[in-house]
Image (cartoon, rainbow, N blue to C red; front, side, top):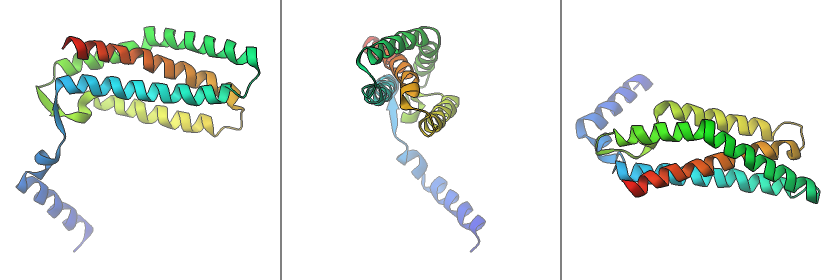
Length: 159
């Protein structure tokens, strides 16, 4: 059997039995808001922890200055960029049907942004540059994500 026939038969198997619908993790809008907040909070804090580990290797007053400056920059990024994305996602979630796929907490095109950011992070980590220069970027982006996760939690609480 050729690969194409096997794939088309498999698609027919999933469609004819309705397994695609049965296996999809469908949840209510309420849980989309919580999932979005938790994902943004966990990813943001993961970036913050990595950045803090890298900054701990620098001298005492310099690492404090870099950390405070990065958190301040993260708050600005939160206000003018990331919070807008979060609010757009929250409004989109609130207009979804009552029960949808769990992964709809992000817009489909936002997944491309996530992939781009992951690749950018990988690229930055593997540059022949000291982590001392990369840590402020991680700390700023992580704090922006952590700050913006509060918008999801607020919408979750009010829903």
